Image (cartoon, rainbow, N blue to C red; front, side, top):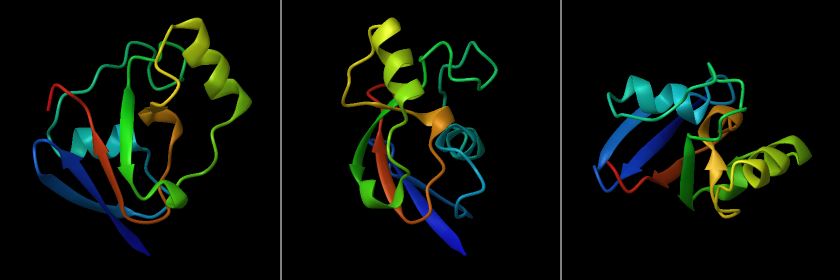
Amino acid sequence: MRCQVRFLPSERMIEIEAGERSLLEATRLAGLPIASACGENGACARCGVEILDGEESLEPETERETRIKERNRIDSELRLACRVHPSGDVTIRASYW
């Protein structure tokens, strides 16, 4: 099954295999910039994105993701793109797109 990832405000869209790719990978495949200094290990928390639509298609935030965001002073409303693998359509936003 495939799902669509929509990126705002750039209006780019990409289809990926549901549950197989992270939002970080999808962002890179779409040709958009995204910070990641930890090699997608979830340690740096630089890949935080806002989920605008489709949150129900994302796995719940883990305790580890919450701790990483707290330690790195990342807004609790953001999700770490490297830790999230959408199983359905989702719309995300980063201010620098």
